[in-house]
Each structure stands twice: as C-alpha cells, then as structure tokens.
Length: 320
Image 1 (tube, rainbow, N blue to C red):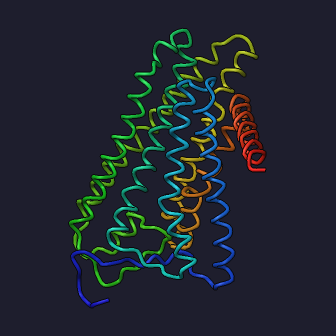
Image 2 (cartoon, rainbow, N blue to C red):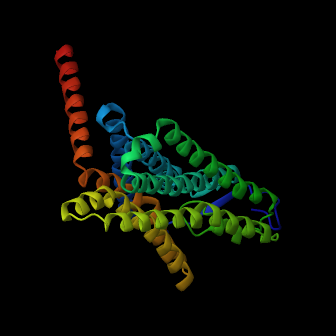
Image 3 (spheres, rainbow, N blue to C red):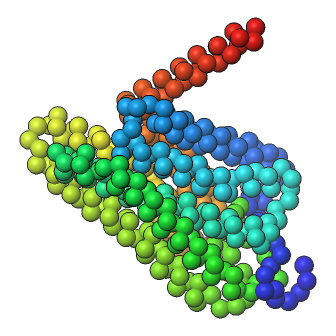
C-alpha cells in the first residue's frame, strides 16, 4: 500500500483471530456451528409464527421481527469472517467496510428498538389488560415496527455517511473480525470530532432512550403485578414477561460487558472476545429462550416440524 494519506482507503485488513492454522480450523468449525444454529433457530421461529394462526398476536408479531433482525445481524459479519478464515484473505474493500458498518448498526439498533416495543406490549398487556386488544391494534403494531425500521436505518445512515468525509492513514489494520465503527475511526488521519458527536447523539437516541423506556415499562409492570392479590395471578403475570426480560438482560448485559471490558482493559483480544458474545452468542440464544420457556411456541414448532416431516414423506413416496 502506498505511503501517505488517502481520501478513501482502497481496503482494510481485518486482523480477527490471528492464530495458527490448527486453531483457525477449530474456530471455523465453532463459528460455523454457531451461525447455523442461529440461522436455523431464528428461521424456525419466523416460520412457526407465520404458519400458526394461534400466534398471530402482537407479542409474536414483534418476536418474528426480532428473530429476523437477529438473523440479519449475524449475517452481516459472520459469513465474511468465515470466508476470511477459509481463504486466508483478511482484506475488505472500503465500500464493503462501509456496507458492513451500515447494516451492523441498522440491525443492532433495530434489535434494541424492537425489545423496547416488546416491553411496551407487555406493559399494555398487564397494566391495561382489559383494553389490550383495542390499544395494540394491528395498525399500531405495524406502525411501531415500521417506525423501528425507519429510525434504525436513518440513525445508521447518519453514522455511516460521516465516515465518507474522513481520510485514512497508511496503516489500515482493524483488530477485529468485522468493520467496527470505533476501530475504523481510530485509523483516520483527519479530525473525527464530528463523527464522535454523531455517535454520542445516535447512542443517546437509539440506545439510552429505548433502554429508559424498557426500565419504565417494567417499573409499571412490577407496580401493577404487586397489586394482584393471588400468588397464582402474580406468577402468571410475571411468566408472560420472563422470556423478554431474559433477552433484554442478555442483550444489554453483553453490550455493557463489551463497553466496560474495553474501558477497563484496552486490549484488542479482550474486545474481540466480548464482541463475539453480543454478535454471535446473544442472537443464538434468543430462539432457545423464547421456545423453551413458552408452551405456545413449543407447540407451534412441533406442529411446523410435523408438517415438514409429513410433506417430506409424501415427496419420498411420490418419487418411489
């Protein structure tokens, strides 16, 4: 690569997991397995909800969108990482890096906003149970999801477009397995003050405010549940929020872990391991949390797999 500054870097080098070929082979098998589990699990959730009329409710409508967001979130970074390991070519083009930043932020923010919408849904279901079907109408549900998509895309677009104004130095090495925006900004030779302002502004709008909304929703939920006299009623009310609360804790817990680990131990290796947690582990566990803790979801998945087996047997019979 030529010495000197470049207005647009032709390509970046994703250092990722620099290890021996034997360890690279193990990592490839591990990450491929995790990706397939994530892809299959979230796809089954989407198919089960769309094919079962019993699950055509606001809660499961939001869940299917969350599964789609998780599926796209992992697909933004993991396939490229697996390809890099196989080909031993860790370079990514400037356009490819910008695209990865845009989609990574978009689907990450969408995850966050959908979790907030789902918290509001649970709040209405418990705090305004008698008016739930009126409040959570199909029109409102559609608008909430559409709004989440629009806000995520606009926020991501704002953060990504500000990168275009930067010039980069000769060292294009990113100590990550994907184009992480903060790491990309560290490579810039020009002033990144505007970029940092945009990031802080977007974080406040797309992360802090939604998280505050989730906390407020659960504050109201707890306050409402404590007023229920029967222990059975309290358990039933809390059980409807159990899966969502687990996913929220996992999502924000891993995200906070990444931030704290990077701040406390400024090591690329520590940041890399923490990033694996929220880019791969969290989306992989979400389908298990929602299916294992939910009898309706388990029933729908069972019926879906039964129909798939039946159709498969019919095809085999027809061919024979």
